[in-house]
Length: 153
Image (tube, rainbow, N blue to C red):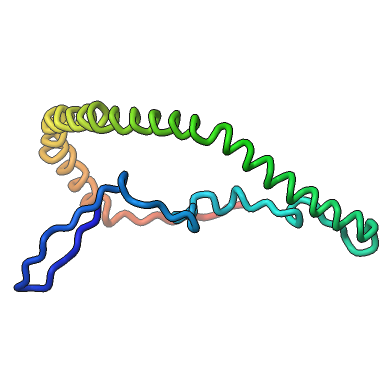
């Protein structure tokens, strides 16, 4: 959903767009760059010939063309066959994860926080009234103690 801001003193209607009904960007298909390091495997990233040992130029060009075309065709074929079914699977999975997170996990964690806060009060009271004064008194007693370390052979 997108909203627009009005200048002070102006009234502007709230504009909301349904993200499911809008157009998608066919040029930039990875706007959040989640696959930046995964999908960029060019011929030069896989096959390289060092100086001093080289194949025939025609073989090198044919290998480059074969790699590029087979990679392109295989990806396009696999995405045509499995793209829509896997999109359905991932959509259902993330919908279920969102449902459980919103309706079960977060309320459970919140409930535990409330219960543990109740259980922690006596413990914190004990620390503040008994343990802290003992450690402060011990610290004041030991404040003047100096240690000297010697190495004897």
